[in-house]
Image (tube, rainbow, N blue to C red; front, side, top):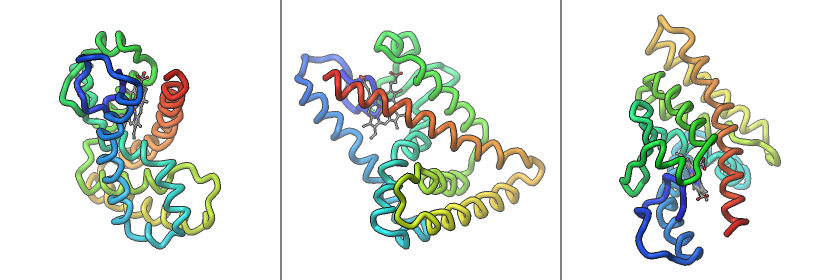
Length: 199
Ligand code: HEM
């Protein structure tokens, strides 16, 4: 069985083939991935990027967007993780599934993000920034992407300064979550790759 919270099927039940496990898993995460594509289409300026750059950013950044969107699956206080299936597992149970360093890094990330108490509007712009800040290798028109990124950073800064004028560190703390996401992305990719190789 698949030890990723994006899995919507409860664990257990009759043993299934690798293909079946992967097919069920695809059905669970595909709607979430579609939502990211839909979200991107609504970022002002995103559709002005070249088609290929839109695809490159989505490929590189979808996981990071999903990480932000599903950070609340990590219950920091209870030290438990809820899967899309609704099943909740305690830390020892997760460790028994073989989860380790990546899991604890994701708990840390979720805790830091939650401590910023972002409003829906702040979260929306931040999420757009996450996508547009994705790994840029092989951009067709990098300067257009950079312009869009700068516009989003300015919008986020002025919104955050307006909402919390007495806490100038809030914006900086939020920007520091971008490199965290990059790290989680590459750690998670390794899990994904080894799953594909092992099975
Ligand atoms: C592990 C796929 C998104 C959290 C894994 C594994 C795969 C996978 C194949 C390895 C499972 C195993 O070895 O049994 C995917 C795909 C995603 C996705 C295809 C998106 C389309 C996410 C997101 C999160 C997440 C958004 C967090 C909110 C985890 C965790 C693990 C994991 C915590 C286990 C890490 C560990 O072993 O320490 N994922 N995942 N995944 N994934 Fe995902």
